[in-house]
Length: 234
Image (tube, rainbow, N blue to C red; front, side, top):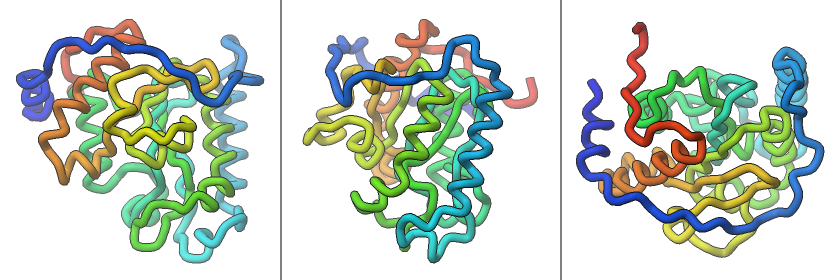
């Protein structure tokens, strides 16, 4: 059942040194540490309603529904992808297709957490036609929702999945292959870049690098690098 974790553990290399780098400046008006989770959840719900009614870019014309987020508003870890696909557009939940199942395996098996312990969002909330990457204009029109989500959830670590998420959050010309392996800073929050699960499905050999990135995130959280896998139902 946990062959993915076992495979990653068997090929994981030495620990990486993780230099820090800068991106977009000060964090701004973050959620206070003692802000009630219920208040944060209510504000996120309000924003989700706004996203459902949003017509700021052409993506709204073909959506079944906006796909706002999934998970815990008090999460220590926030995953960011690029945008919903066909399955997500139908169900209204991010990362529920094949790539989503792999992400769930990563959270369960490599991080030792239930999926409900993390928060998952995308740069854009409506499905781009044909699952193409969202354009810069679409990201600009929709990105304020993600920025508000990050500010409200106030995670300790952000994990950017793939180039669209990474380049939205960090202003750099570097590719994902050159961004990963270090800790970036997003408004005072540690940010780790790794491959999108869809890329891992096409390139299984990259799972070793993803495992290294997940270990880095676990170190930042002060958690064991090889935690026992979370087993639903236990």
